[in-house]
Length: 76
Image 1 (cartoon, rainbow, N blue to C red):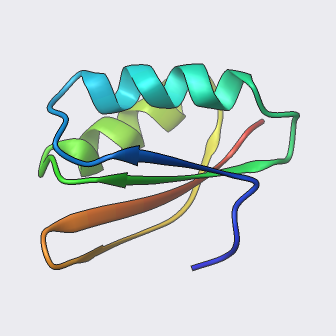
Image 2: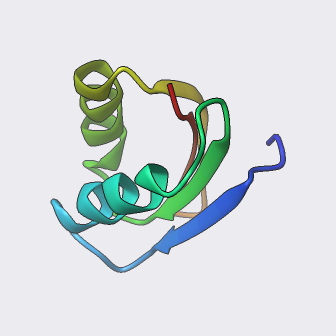
């Protein structure tokens, strides 16, 4: 996974907390910068896809390993 400008640990949090914390963190970034989010909520994949569609931010990549979901988002 690509190196991010900022990282957010959302492990152990359930919907909607990972998205709410992501929204706050991404607002602190400049346009074009990236945010890496690590979550354990299985619903996070659909949540982050919907979040990016609604906000116009880009879901650059996502992966899953050992019950952890990692997302890389680029601020629009």
